Image (cartoon, rainbow, N blue to C red; front, side, top):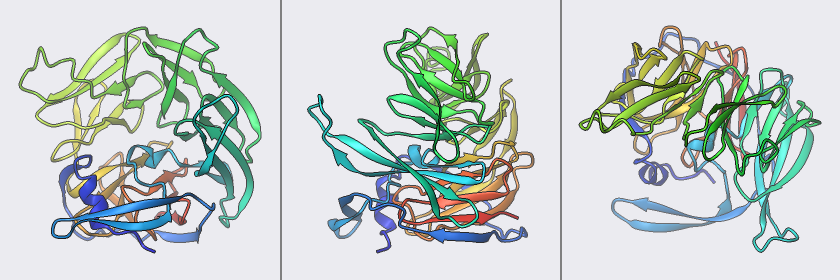
Length: 365
């Protein structure tokens, strides 16, 4: 059954940044679909509800969880790895010895990039969400309680233990756009981890919260500059080995995202900004409707935004990082509850979109 569109957009409207976009028809060639498959896993049965302005709240009944109800996890559920596409899917819960609460059960699937058929699988249990990331050497990073580095066919290729370097905790939530560097919040402090050998380098001992990481540092929307700029509500701070650098402050703001090591997308303003790490505005995008970040290619050439409007089909617009121009538009077979999962191939020639229920691969013009 196709999920309702109005209710999820209403529920997540406070998360999406509202902007204006020029919807003039694009002269770009349409993407071509390579394959579409699903469901990939049995999945979990969940109850849902829909909210309308006239009818109140209505239960939708038990249905398979599409796992697309979080904008944050939308770019952390599927990745390209060599000649494979790797997906992680939550399939249920299981009691684990020594724990009072059951653990989530996840299934990793390695799909043939030519056919979409599953070639290898692996099961993982964890007590929290498990994001996955694409390293720049055709490996996959799985960030559970320990951090696994896997080959495209899901063979072990390294392990990073959060506690091994003396930190009491850690959390990896981001990888640099080029796939070289993971960001680890060590509470307090922050370190950069080489995605190939999993060796950490401390960046700061101070308490840190990052929205995106590069190979040199991280950015955050932390508002600790309000003392100097009491009338502003949006800030972009870049932290590297030299310290904190205020790149932007103003009357709007969102979760800044690196597009390259030197360019940052500020997605929270009426017209989203691309700024560099020196604090200069490089480009102002013109967009229309609600939108959110949907990934960038490792070669730094293209990035995607999910665009939405009330009760309309979900769509993803591919932009050129260099020019800011629209390259292509992709509409998933099934709309995500908040945002479908997406990922670019490293060379930006392909784009995968969907969920464990329905996943499709497109070749971009």
